[in-house]
Image 1 (cartoon, one colour):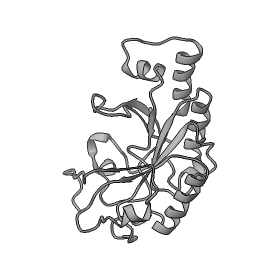
Image 2: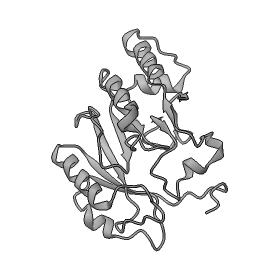
Image 3: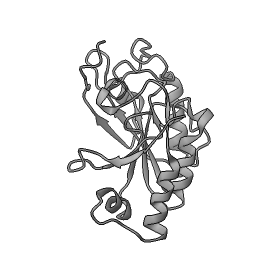
Image 4: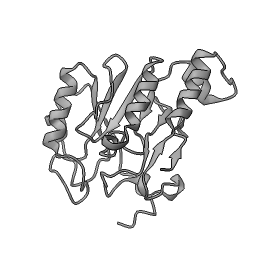
Length: 216
C-alpha cells in the first residue's frame, strides 16, 4: 500500500492555534459529499486509500527528543521541539473504518505517547479502535453538521445517536471534547447540535468550503 509523509505545518500557521498537522490516512470512507479534501486535486489525493509512514514520524521524534538534533531553520522541527499541540485528522478521518484493519492511528499514538505529545483529534467516528488515547495527552473535536442523519450528504457516517453515545463515553472518561460544527450548511445545520451536546467543552463553527472540483 502506498505510504505518504503524514506530518507538516499548516499553510495558515500564522493564524492557526494548531499549526502542526498530521493525518494517518489519505481518502476517507465516510464519503461526505461536501468534503473539500477528497475533491481538491491540489492535495494530490488518489481514490485509493493511502496510509501514513509512521516510521518517518518515529525517526523525526527520535532525532529531536532523544538525540537533541533540531534544525533551527525548519519550522516543523522548532514547533515540535517547543511542545506545540498537534492536530490529527484535518484532511482525513483518523478513526474511519479502515483503522480496524490497518491500525495506523494506533501506531502513531503509540509513538507520540512515548514523547508526551499533546494531540487534538478531529473525527466523525464512534469508535476508538483500541488506540491508546489518554485524557492527559489527547482531546477530541467531534465534527457535526446535523442531527438528522442526512445520508444524502453523509452516506457512511455513524448515526448521530451512536456518535452521541461515543461523546458521552469520552466525557465520562475525562477527555475534553469540543464540538466542531463543520461545515455549517444552510438549511441543514441547526442549533439542535448545541442543544444535544450542551455540555461540550467548546464549540467551533466553520463555513462550507466549496472547491471547483466538487461538481455536486
